[in-house]
Length: 256
Image 1 (cartoon, helix red, strand yellow):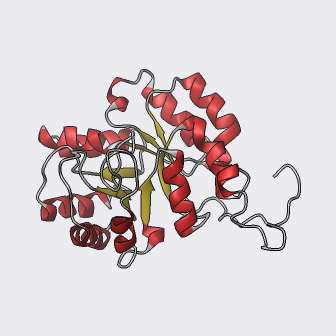
Image 2: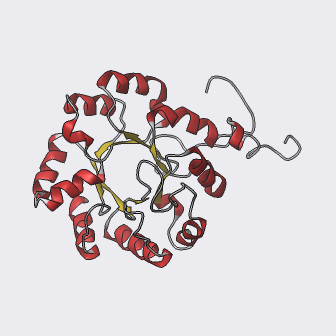
């Protein structure tokens, strides 16, 4: 850090397994990616090439190499996995991951229906390719999954080999663990946490109020995902009490 301040909470150091910031790249140019990394790379743990953007991104290989040059794992969005799967091209998907030196893979079923046992089978197969992140929750706002089912699905996917389960929210943060307004479904989140270790969950939290909720609930080393590139440094300041929203969170009561 640039200067000394007391009463700053301790962030886990990179490479970290807990306290992850997963960034969603929805179409940055190579130069934009370079500029973004020049200031934010030390605060980024994983980069997701959102939904199916990898299919249409020019100079994809070069862009991935820019991220990997900073030792930041890159992976394709779960929607791309589903696009290959529904076309019976699962083996092609594996080959593409290997071709682009992608060592993180996401398994999701937010856009298509996959029997859960079958989904867990894909997770098991992909553990041979790399680190598996599996997403739980539907992109359909009308499809409400009860808390017991979230827990059941998350447990099974972790047992199948997922390193992390991702709590679905979409890039807008208005489905899954959130209501259409973006408000956190607090009862759902807290019930999940009675059964699933928080360090194994990446909470998609694109909105500042959502990030704040999880920081207050779990602490500065909560795993957060779907963070916009422009929000990485603002989020890091919020994690450590250097933004108005969390300014008093870590101060001694006498100081505060």
